[in-house]
Length: 142
Image (cartoon, rainbow, N blue to C red):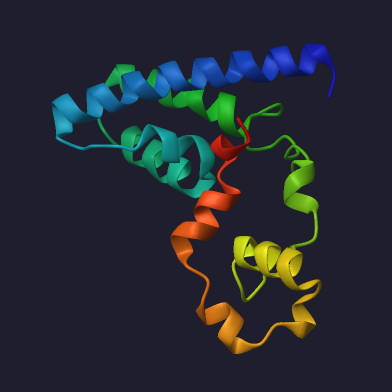
């Protein structure tokens, strides 16, 4: 994404937010209708529903706001029309296998016995949770 595209998207997002705030206030004061601005920014169906609802009302300000929001969200370079940004790298990584035992217990037992395969149930029963926390607490290193 180029810098000019990023600037255009930020400008469009700011414009949409200010228009949605005005739309929200007018609908709340005149029709006692409460809208969710944040949800309107991310869900095209909800945005379309609110715009269609507001267009049915006989308020010229609402008609103007709806026309501008229609262009910002659903126009040629609209916020809902443009391709979505790529997912962050962390969300694309494969999930890490979960462990059945707490990591602190595994570390203490492994360091005490050599490997987890040699540990019996009685050794795990003698471990106190507070002592595990005390040994793994970062403040102990200071």
